[in-house]
Length: 217
Ligand SMILES: *Cc1c(COP(=O)(O)O)cnc(C)c1O
Image (cartoon, rainbow, N blue to C red; front, side):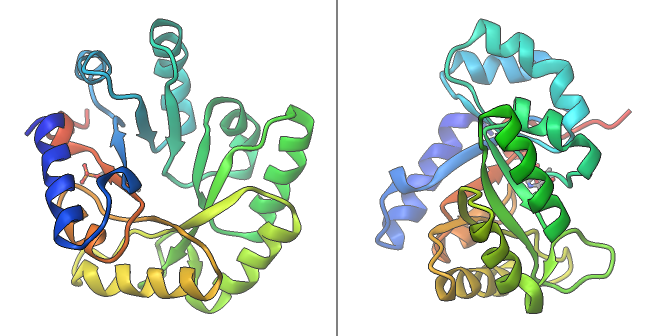
């Protein structure tokens, strides 16, 4: 598939659900992709990218940012507290805030850096043991803590369990967001972004459908 095909599918899904395509932000997930594929998408004019790991992003994005203006980087993978400072330096948006300690560390380091990335609270909608994200029952409290810390909280993020219909999880995330007066919904990947748009996604995270399959070595 290509970037323009994905954009067409976004526009069609948006129209089918009475939404504006402009309200749906496409994050091109470039983790593990070879640089030439990433550069091709930059040359097509796309500027919004997502990465899973701070260290991997540090290895490729400073050079791309010198070459291309207005790059917007989103961290979508788990963030260890000891990488928080580096994450604040490199990323414009952090989607994986899932515990009070991390929120407090980000608030403190952002003050020092003089720059506050936008954040999303990641919710473990499937209450899966091994999965990142705050349990649903604790989400409202973490949201309140982020607000008390004055972090620029934009919304919620989830990664549905692989073996369940994603639409249920998207609906659940939307419900938690609505009761907390949050507009941003970071949900939907290559296989399910149309379902996510139907449920109100504002940020979809699409990797392999844009860049091709990831080859892990
Ligand atoms: C890898 C990843 C994606 C993109 O997955 P694709 O199936 O390649 O679109 C989206 N979100 C997160 C959190 C990811 O880790």
